[in-house]
Structures are given as structure tokens and as C-alpha cells.
Length: 265
Image 1: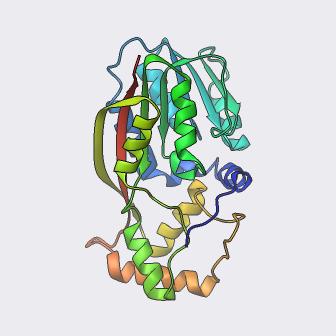
Image 2: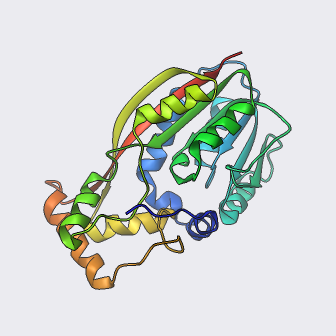
């Protein structure tokens, strides 16, 4: 069952996870580093927009790669933005704004729009990509990493086996759909790759807690009914039995698309 995403719930859940996010976000941090590795050699990057900046992990990597660039980070979650402002309170090149990326508009244009693990939360990703493309200077770069179809396969199978129903969650699209969306927005793909990233956790219950730790829960969203404690424990036990590795660790697996595109002059 696909959950109906509500922006207020996204802001609330991720705000509640601002302090704990990086403790639990091993896969997400690795994905951000991989994204930076694909764009760090680009030249002519003076103005950057970080979409869904969260705790500022990607922002920091962008700042190291492009130390002379001015960076604006936007995020829907107020506590995430407050954390970023505290981290870089003495930097005149980094600024942060509480904003919904799906409605954000800017009078300034950017040489690079970057985002890591954010677009899956958008209600209208096609329109949002179009808005972001409109904020790029001619020849500007759009760099994005996002989970695609096949992500969380172990968890979806476990949920189905234990509760005999589909797990509520996001609709992870195919990589092709995202690439086509970029083309429709006037962006020419110059790099496209998929990778499998795993987070490893000490138990099935620990793996499930990771989602709350990073704010990726469906609490407060329309159509979501939380499971009982007994059901959660049953899911966790089945997850361990079915997917624990030889060393006992339990994986959460993401299929990730990295795509770099250029705005056609």
C-alpha cells in the first residue's frame, strides 16, 4: 500500500530525527559521499543549491569540494535547518532556509543543484525537477542520488510473509523514469549509474529502529496505521531468520540511482 505523503508529516518526522540522524544514517552518508565523488572535479561552480540538506552532511562535502562557492541549503524540517545553522554559524558562504522544495522559488540561479535521498518524498517529482532545472544557469549541473525500484526488498518480503499484506511505503520508481523526467525538464544526462548500498544492523529490531532514527517513518501521514508492538517484534524476528548474514548482522538494502545532468544552453 502506498502512503499518501503529507509535507507537514515529513517536516515533523525529520525534525524529530535531527539529533539522531547521522548515528543511524550509514547508507545515506555513504551515498552522499559517492555522489560527491561524481561531481567534485567540475569547474565553474560558484553558486550551489542543496535540496533537502538535512543535517548538512552533503552540504559539508560540497563545501570541501567547492570551497569558493556560495551554498544555499533548503529543507522542510525546521530542526534540521537549525542544526545546519549552528554548525556553520561562522561561515559567510553557507546559508540555510526552511523551505518546501516542491514550492521553493529563487530569484538567483545556480551552477549546481545537488540532492541526496530526498526526491522520493516529493508528491510531484516531475514538476519539482522542472522547477529545479529552471533555477540552473545555462550549462549548470543537476546532481542527484535517489532510491529506485528494488530498494528495501528484504523488508517488503518480510512484511508480506508475516502480515499477509503489502508493506505501506513509498513508490520507488525505475531509474528510467527519473532519467526521462530529467530529459523532459531540458536536462541532458551526462552520467548515469546504479549501485547497491547496504546498511548493517545488529538485529532485526535494530534495523527497523533505523528508519525512525533517520526520520523515514510514516507516522502522521494520511492512510498510515501503526503496527502493534507484537507485530513489530514478529517482523523483526522473521527478518533476522531470513536475511541475517554469517556474522549475525541484518542488512537493509537500497538500489540507488546516481544521475548527473546538464542544462542544455
